[in-house]
Amino acid sequence: MMSNGGTDTEKGTKQGAMATQHGSGTAVTVLRLLTFAAALSAFVTMITNKERKLAYGILLKWSKYNYSDAFVWFVIGNGIAFVYALVAAILGAVSKSPMVTKHLVILDLLVVNILMASAAAATAVAYIGKNGLEEAGWTEICSIFDRYCHHILGALIACYLGWLFLLVAVFLGMRRS
Image (cartoon, rainbow, N blue to C red):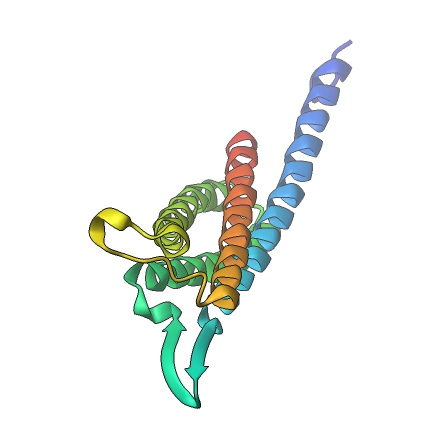
């Protein structure tokens, strides 16, 4: 039976597709907020992470994130990610424009790559910090700076979770647009 907008089956299919798109839009917003929380957590953990060792009242060693370029890049990558994720979550929730949705998916994909690149670099340096690299003469430091290394591990886990949340958001956003 035909009506002004097509058959009842066509209307049901269109309404179902719109409901799925709306539901995935909410999921994408939640995933971006989870990415925001994870990246902010990694960022704050790294910038506040420092440990010093005293022996006989003398400061012998000090360890901070900015002693390694890879950890600096990790902080920058997570900083970009948490700012972007918050702005994108707000913009995606407020705007109903398909063009905005498409642009946000492209930017999500860019930020996914930034997060992975920064996490991979930090993971490589953390691995050397934990195990050393005998061939290069680098000794492991995690036996000395154990609290520092545990905080790095926590920041890495948070970053990889943020990466995973945003990657799922990319797939849902691609399906939606």
